[in-house]
Length: 320
Image (cartoon, rainbow, N blue to C red):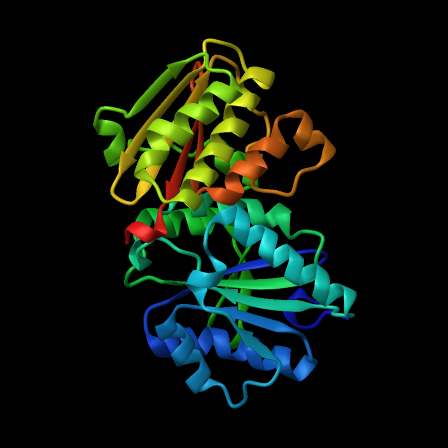
């Protein structure tokens, strides 16, 4: 049976935790972990190196806790969801009645971007709903920007407090409603420069060849292959679910590719499309192709305002 404040909850019990010191982090996280140890519940901790050291030093025992470096777990939102779901499925199959997770979600205060991860924080309320999961997302208010903290409050149904206390979060919003109010993504620096590629109404094959050639010359081979795959899926989706004219535009900056595919359709009705494992309904809305694109891209954003645009960012680790 489930334990703690999540004992009578069905599905994902999703908490935010706000702290302003190392001691504050330990005061919130350690009781959560110790109670999980006492209950024999499998527990996963994915924090940055500093926070991992703080938590490990404060724990009386590390038994039953798996530590995974945050950069390894939080590579991109879709991969993170897929990886967590594999872990949770295995643990439930092994008999877990509740799983505990503590995770540092990237944001500008820790060197990450936020647009994609804010979508993640909303999406996981659905993506993990089938699991007996209790997850805690700690945010350091000393470095987390105010707009990020505001989004965190809108995407977490519960809040963890020091000394093992918990409360419902009145600021929480339904994920679809929250995502519908997200502002459009700002232009990236690359988009303020001349593009390296611009095509009107390309076939998927034409798009693959163009990106593999003109754009791929700037990228490592593995990154070029990811770019070709993602482009093919986006152009195929635009022809299948959108309306022409279809415009493909690509820019290359230091260590990354930025690419947009615009069509004159309305875009997928599901704001979570591409982030969650494909279902029959999602495939009908282009979800399978978008899910594949999400797996290889560092960031995927949708913009529907008269036209529908998908913007992808693919990082080239060899350039760093």
